[in-house]
Image (cartoon, rainbow, N blue to C red; front, side):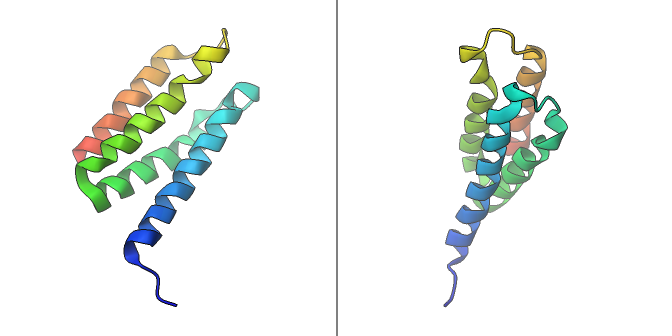
Length: 97
């Protein structure tokens, strides 16, 4: 069975983005260190930008929304400026390649 190159690329991005989303979902429940899962987002963004160009901005927007979602259902989520800086860096990485 021969794998289609586009299907493999999409699968890689989905796995990396899914892992990032899963770690981000558990962040309010004790996973305080973002250094554990932020590289997953940057790896996915770099690969997406290399493979599909400026369409990587869509993934950066998804990661930005995921980063800010806990603020809507939790009152004491710290590090708003860190989330904002991470969002800017997601877009810089997505647009920079």
